Length: 239
Image 1 (cartoon, rainbow, N blue to C red):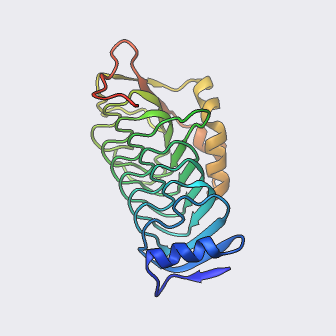
Image 2 (cartoon, one colour):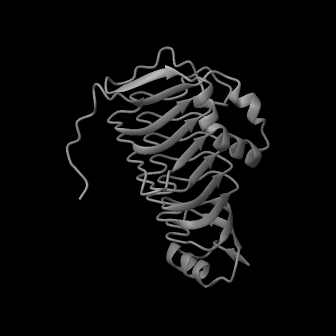
């Protein structure tokens, strides 16, 4: 089923998605927010530019965006997959608790903020380009992989990566010279075991975007994890 978003607001668009039988496509997307929020049972292909919180609270659907997406992609998603063929805005994967986000291009600041593992679920976000400042801020679980495949000389991440990180892992396809990490994390060169841990996610990313996984994985990676000897002191605890 095809849904034209040209003359619909986000409430009408999501109502049409809920009523659709089976997989569907959205054309002429014009910044509507909360597309597929809480959805669990459809594959949805989107052309145009979806607005903030694409796939918020996603529970198992697969969303594919054939261009760019705005802020808070995958906000608090629980399961499923979001595939973006362009760039994304800020706060991608905000508090995501499961599922996967694959982005061919760059991400704005605070990607992976408050990411956490929920029960048996382990969220994964793979960014093909580079990320802005505060990558993995307050990360509590899950995996963030940044591949830095864009062809410029800027650092793979902006300022203050992993601030407040107290769980999970970040993998950066870089030797990270010149990047300053906070004192509560450790950063070390990836070894063979580290590479094997991210191979499935990187292979899936490469297959989605027509790239060579082995070529991507042959470059140096840096692994960032919380430092158990100098832990981040949380200001609050979960109920």
